[in-house]
Length: 326
Length: 182
Image (cartoon, rainbow over all chains, first blue to last red; front, top):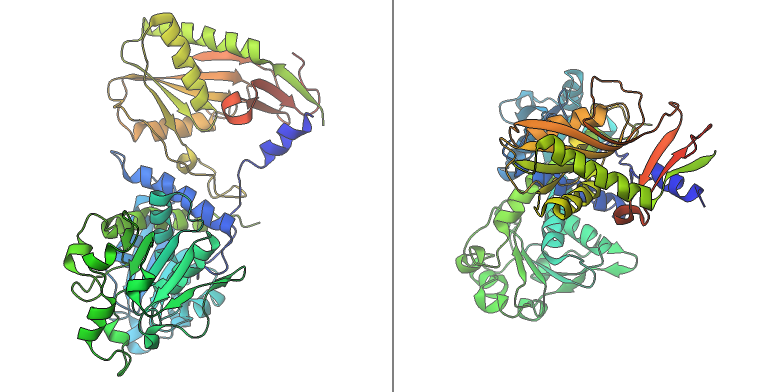
């Protein structure tokens, strides 16, 4: 009988974080994601204090290596790293030796050689962070790779949803727009399915994925082409940015038709649950995927997503930098 | 491995009430007094102290909770990242007498971390340390102001406080060889 308390005493540290890299949400376990969200709650509280900074990662160097433009992801990671007391080096493709033809692996090796512990990387090629992770002992956090994955965005979206809704079991999440090119949609779907949510991808048939559709325990994302139907009774409506830089000709008939069929506007949002959450990973093309009334309306969580992003990225930097290495 | 129950529910309750009296006596009342419990078990202890003080003095002393995970000095040396939870100190601590409450005082490293964490919330007039159990073996110059029980222990032993709020019972156990008997 007295053995029970001792066994419990040994397990108070909960799940151990052992991952060197964060590349996508697909291989994370539910327990690992729980740990990220729990840690992020603590980090959010740190951000609300009079002194909103700690020195836990003093002596840790974080590099942001962005081969593609970004405002919020890069800034969010920089703020997160500094709030934990880490030093931050920012590199972009323009203005670095990448312009002289330095390869990704060389760049990553150089960063490691100058003492970088964690590299936050965004790249226009799907899979680039996976390649980098195999060639360095520094940790790689995927800040978005091509049309493949954007795990930190998915985790901050999940954090925001769980924060508002509690359990996501059986909740209906509609992700609408250019799903085919969306690393946000894919990484979100993996995480949401693991949390028991029903995920619907909605968009024109040409912008829906045909292969590699996220599936967890036999549950698969539902495909829909009619937003007026798909949005009915939704708990969460997540609109995606129409990625003009990734559009090839002929995928959408015209911008005007896309707007008329897939824009989330007040009339469509009324078909969802009365207090449905409206989300968007940003930056918003206002007047295209979201009408201005909806983007700035009472149901919009777009600003909460950005604020939560700092807390979730602090949690990830902390777990990865202080991970179990045994 | 042997285990011995060092404290049961009645003794724990008496001990907490005595600590409540000592805190009020040292503070000459409840003026400017706030309690901050360290997570996880210092916090329910702080709430119990506040309940005892309410009973004696008819005054509600503010109670907050403090997480020290981000302030530990062994973050990079442990087997796993220490858990991080939100602290909750919903009142100003500037100019107050803050009594930090924890279940077990051992090396003093948690208390050191708690001092750093607390000072990120403001500038108290003074900080006092109250622990249910002092088991000795300090590694830092930390001294408690209010002690429930001193338990002489060997370094290899482990002391475990269980509270009904977090563990379903009120008891203190000592594990390991030559467990001190109650």
